[in-house]
Length: 465
Image (tube, rainbow, N blue to C red; front, top):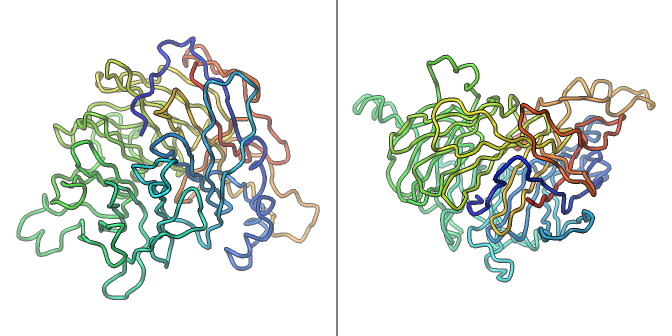
């Protein structure tokens, strides 16, 4: 997470597009990689082939020099981060390297000591169904350093983690349904630590419900400065574990509420967790929730406040990031399904409901990844989304003249494990910050009437000026 970016102090600050992928991914899956849909899905339907090639996920390296992305065409790509101080026209960027995946990835994570000058640290861990966890290299995605076996002890079937996180230079944590496992990257056998998160019936009977732990698919992991591991599940629960997941369970709480704001806050599962730099606050995002939640972990389970107006009532995983200024104040940045990136100022010093302070119109499609670069003041976004079922009606019909993609203005229906992303084709233009009260910027992406906003699939790099 970016922690050293100084965010704009007032509403007159701007973002300027430094580079983007332009029109490269504003296409269908089959156009991006002809024949790949058939290879990965067996006999692919026309709907599969004509799906928008949106960005599912994006990760920024620890040194701020590389971004790893994963698209609907099931291809991993690594991009070099451009310099943010250029005043030239926005550059069109191309992948440094890429590699197709034989099956849909369920999770990926980058090494915490990533240094582009040291290939031994440019590691990427990925997981996919029915295969071992694989350790590859972000600078050569076709190379495999090692693989790690996590199997069901009864069926011997491979367990595909739904979340991965490096907790130090030599260990990563994997989360699956009702279980966590810790792996040593130098040991390719079984996990060094594995334990269920939900206690059995006997334990619940003997020790009570408070020791029942949490259950469900582990959808997000985050590590605090105090080495406390937070694990969130699609059951709307969060568990805290000592010693980076290798210690005992410290606490567990759920996200259910009994107040007037329940309808606004209630989501259908944790999509992202993040710790504040001081380790006192935990930030929580859920799917199908219009708010970001802020918890004071010094009072476990107590919600300090919530950030409203996120525009995230969708099953897409719309990511967030935060930055601290020189005074230690934390500003939260998050994208929404309406194509805007919003900023909430000084979020840990206020209680109750907090409205966004700034908003930027960045895309016609959902802004799925919002990343702040700690190396220099830069915002990285991805956009795009899978189309709704109504957009794909008739794609399997025999009429060859049938349009492959009807226009869709706000498609946000998706059961994808990863969320779709942002657009930034604002070549040669500045994007102005505006407060919600004054209206949003009129600068928008170029829209193809035959494809609609769902094809606004762009990786963008913005300079904070």
